[in-house]
Image 1 (cartoon, rainbow, N blue to C red):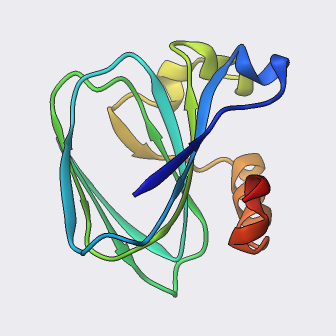
Image 2 (image 1 turned 135 degrees about the vertical axis):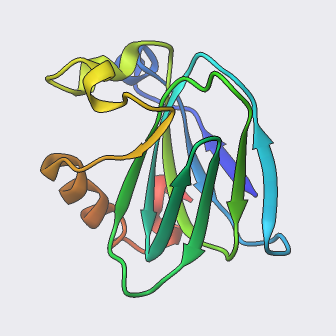
Length: 141
């Protein structure tokens, strides 16, 4: 379902455990439980409708949607993750507390909930540029 890529840069390794890229080999819908953790994830999606409810996040392919970003904070309860369709996803998995290095405001102000959309122009522009690169050229794949 995913390929994890460890940063090569010693500077990035201080803050990021890995980058995760989705693959579409599974049968859909795909559902699993994400358990409480200390890390933080910033998944970037393209052409995806995202539904966020308490303890449940769903993803559905929707070509009318441009890039979207979710901030997955520290999960305190099990969360059901459902992919109704294969979607394009690239996630940045941060070490505990180190997402703060990449934002000017404290993380708690960005991610008051376990899961929420991120609406920040710098990151939205980054996601738009990232998804214009063909998948085989992303991260050296």
